[in-house]
Length: 151
Image (cartoon, rainbow, N blue to C red; front, side, top):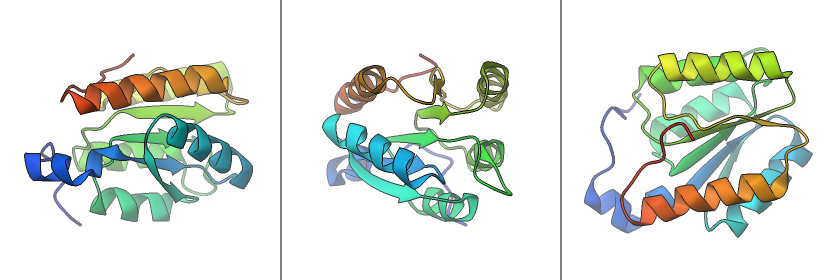
């Protein structure tokens, strides 16, 4: 496991690591839609369809942003959030889930308690324009060296 407890250094920023976004969703169609929106917002995109793949990728790269579905099969999005907290993941997390409002709200609260940089959650089907705008805002802040905390 790599140590991701610190923010990326200037060399990482210059190399474009923060221009990447990780979409974590086990549903192929939803993953493709979110990837398209992320690209429109200016991100290069990687995909993870399971907890295991997400954990591996998060251990290797500090993405500029992560989108996360809460339902990933046996190990869910909450497990991903716990892992991100364990490694001190600094980047904004956007929960995009078909779970009901209460579950999304509980996940948001849990992520905040874990000191994660979590943005307001989105329900599925996601309002594409709203998600794209949030991603663009995150991308703009990344360009000037700011992070978006809990929008």
